[in-house]
Image (cartoon, rainbow, N blue to C red; front, side):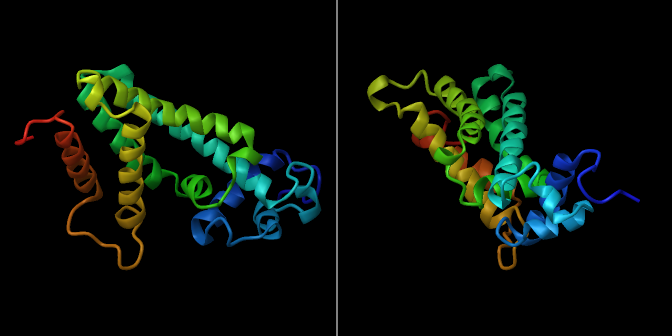
Length: 205
């Protein structure tokens, strides 16, 4: 039996774990600190030793999520190996994998309404994740004539939006969101159309 109150062995992480489950079940706005405290088997008052409120708890979960996400994206990109195209496509698959494996983190990151200006550390780790995709976009498009080449930030934003849309509409098993195609195929086809438009893929690829 875990002792209730201020002497919980690892209260901060216990609260994060409890909140992650609640977010996955109810969404980031669908639970209270009291519920998180109950699930962590501590008193509500003990929560405030580590978090000023629910938003700070969600921000910590989002921060951890972006750290995991950035690590996963960097691993998938693999310094552009074995080719710029293969590495770029791997980052798209990594996006889908993250959303599936870490639903609580994903929802805290993208559905909680947190403002980066209020959470500088959250902004820092989010920038690390987006930098991986920008680097991949820059490497893949470096052979496009400069006057026709989209800025890496725009290129990566387009692919991020496509990936996010596939996740939101088809990869999270929401009612009415079933697709006749697996999310991975939808994303790969969408990225392929985009890359062909830039002249980075042959018409038959």
